Image (cartoon, rainbow, N blue to C red; front, side):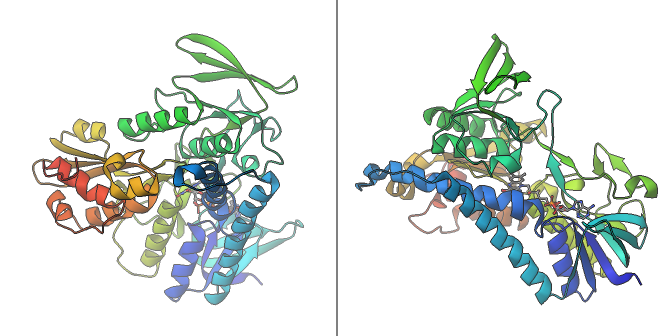
Length: 464
Ligand SMILES: Cc1cc2nc3c(=O)[nH]c(=O)nc-3n(C[C@H](O)[C@H](O)[C@H](O)COP(=O)(O)OP(=O)(O)OC[C@H]3O[C@@H](n4cnc5c(N)ncnc54)[C@H](O)[C@@H]3O)c2cc1C
């Protein structure tokens, strides 16, 4: 007898598990198929364990700068295994939390690898090779991604590692080359540099964190150089020789070729979708540039089969996957959800300083033809930042001159990943710059920098 559900979700990452819980709230009988650990990459190998590692690095950095606060912290050190252990413990705890939430919401978990056989039918292959048929009116695919590999850098998890190994290393590498300066590369570069590794960060494009506003990239590079990260931009890794004791990394730049010796290379060059053996070819589900083609409510071209999260177009972020999951199941349940506004998705990088942004960069806004008003407020002028000893960074805001529409916000500094939500909400409510300036922000807080940046755009800034 096949297991019967109204909805079956393949994959339990932040797309899949959130969709399952919302569907259960809406009265659907839900099953979730997962081949590894509940919570997907985000809880087990992504967002959460990296933030635990970064917190250890940040506390270590604070202790090393205790004297700046009039404090004494002598013989500051660490147990690298305990740092890794803490991160794994936090991840395990979060994954167990999903088990609890599934029980609470009466969601059945089927452990194994799912493959769609036909609309309404999924075969699950368990770890012991046995199979089970699952039937459901609707199927959501949420199988996520894994590390992308370049032919010049095949991941062996010894000398050339991916993100999973980077968060479970047995010991600190003395010399590390990080290839790729997106959020993942930058976060690991900060972590390992702060813990004491010699770190080279290699970026193919002309600037690090290349999706961010140019001024953010410049500030991040400055901050990284200050802590001793060797930053190479417009640089291409053409070869990694792993034959000797360590690795010899050949890097081509405009100035010529250089070879960097290191113990380990971290390949952080993006992710690739898990679309193999899930039945998409057999069902004829449309794929474009490695992602499943879906409509505004995540329906694929095959009726009854939906797809959400990293395997669909749009930014590969946990909060995007969750938002898509909720919209998808609300539509399945007969509600009338609004399509997701992909222009109002915040993106965050949790190194130190942190980066947070939403909307257009200044260059993009100008390219789109907007006459822009730009305001910037540096944390060096913020009372809270001075008191906290975190004066690096700024908030930059971009408004449309004509109607006052808030086109974008870009921040770098301490805790800015917490500040960006204000901008997301304000933009969702179609708030203009003047309404921000007239919204009283608490003093002293880092959030005042948003109000001041908006005021700067309109020539009304007080503290500059
Ligand atoms: C190092 C790192 C740090 C990150 N940090 C952040 C961050 O700070 N903030 C942020 O927003 N995003 C972050 N991300 C991205 C985030 O993790 C992803 O965007 C998010 O996890 C995508 O969710 P998802 O549900 O689409 O898929 P995933 O989380 O990838 O989950 C997919 C699940 O499907 C399972 N699966 C796959 N195939 C099958 C199958 N055939 N049968 C059964 N199960 C299957 C997998 O085992 C997995 O559990 C990070 C990613 C990495 C790698």
